[in-house]
Structures are given as structure tokens and as C-alpha cells.
Length: 41
Image (cartoon, rainbow, N blue to C red; front, side, top):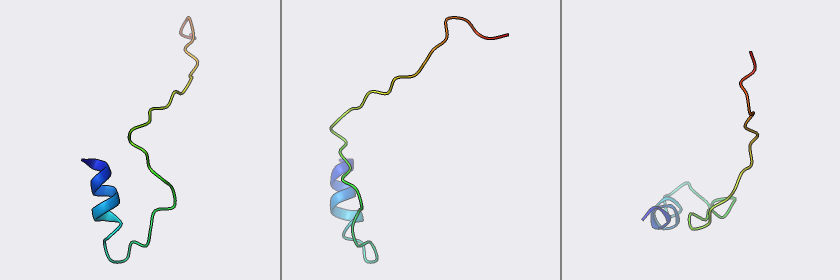
């Protein structure tokens, strides 16, 4: 389980103080991108 590795093993490694952000692998996100109808020539 990747979340267990990140939280349990990596953060407990000497020299790694803490992560600056909370990583959530259980939450998806949507990103909108523009897809043109035709390819420019």
C-alpha cells in the first residue's frame, strides 16, 4: 500500500522531518484541457 509506505516508512526515515503537504491517494481530481476539433496545419 503506497500510502502506508509514504506515511510509515518514508516519514520515519532519519533526515526526513515531515512532508509539507498532505498526499491523498484516495481522492481523484479532474483537469479540463482543450481538445481542438481539427488539427492546425
